[in-house]
Length: 447
Ligand code: ADP
Image 1 (spheres, protein in one colour):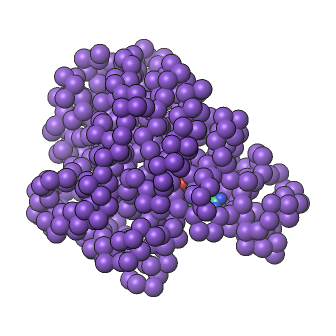
Image 2 (tube, rainbow, N blue to C red):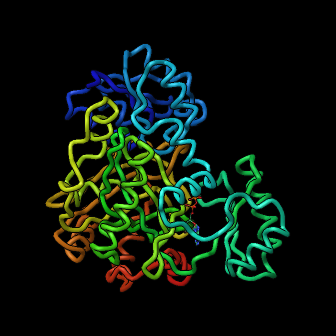
Image 3 (cartoon, rainbow, N blue to C red):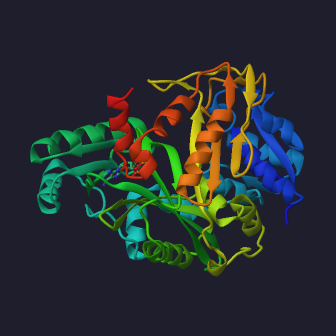
């Protein structure tokens, strides 16, 4: 086992990793920008190294600074958290070239899944159900028209190198395909420096269901069921739950086994998430994330496992601490993402926290790097806390969420907490009968 690991991240996820490491008796090194000198992850780690000025590109994304921080502190492994360098295959290669361990999958797996066409081809070959569409990039408008006539409208044109919901255009009919194709190309070129696009059948009312997988890197893998993350705004998740309110045990077993077998066959290492759109009882693969996800705590809650501990174990060469048979679902869990943002436009609100009180009690977990007097810097993501509740069933989890939100105090900046109070009044949220468009429509009509 490692003696010391470095966490190449900040905020709540850096704390999450420090906590797991401490319970394992591993020392931790925090890295931080000059804007984060007083941040909680710096206080909680055993050691810290300042790696640059505030902008992420000069600090949390600076590969030479992070490698140098490992060398001066003697850290043997790097946990990337999510975001920043977590899905950067080049970074993983450099880490390995310096005889350090990356706590995550191989550079090759990150590269395969980072390119959406290669990812889809690979998953298809591994027996994972995919959205019907072009096999690979679509070179020109004429081929796009021919293909769409075959698969039928509506369709969605997506950037191969896309991410964060950008570079996607829907065409409802043949009249719209030419402009959708050209716009998607132009946007892809501008945003990702690569204008390759592919086309898929557009599913009109799907849910977002993702399967958590975990591999030992030696051909063994398990799945930890699904998370339903259908409540999204601009393709950003805001409310996540596990298990999915509409997924039966038979469906879970079936799709879970397909996913676990797929990652086992490629000797995948560590945590991964296979994302699907789910409509009329069918799963359609959209992408795989080769990292820990923001919403991983809902899975931890219902299975009673520590996914970060497991990542560190497997990266150090130890076997996984559970088998598929050990994994049974206990109750229901919900996470809400609390952002420092002003409603209704969701504009970022950095600033000083004048009062902070975290909710507690049975079945409540608060993952946050906030404290009284903390100054939220304007340079990074606006996520300031994740409130995760666990109950024996969905109604109990909803009641607990309502109760915990009532206890939470965050003064000094505006947050998205009022959104969750309002959502908990909605019939669709209470019954779980929503799809990926529900929240956007509700926000338009019910500000
Ligand atoms: P990104 O990497 O940019 O997040 P994804 O491929 O994961 O892109 O898609 C993001 C979101 O776009 C999905 O969660 C879904 O809301 C929507 N989407 C993507 N593909 C389709 C499709 N074929 N039909 C309907 N909606 C889609």
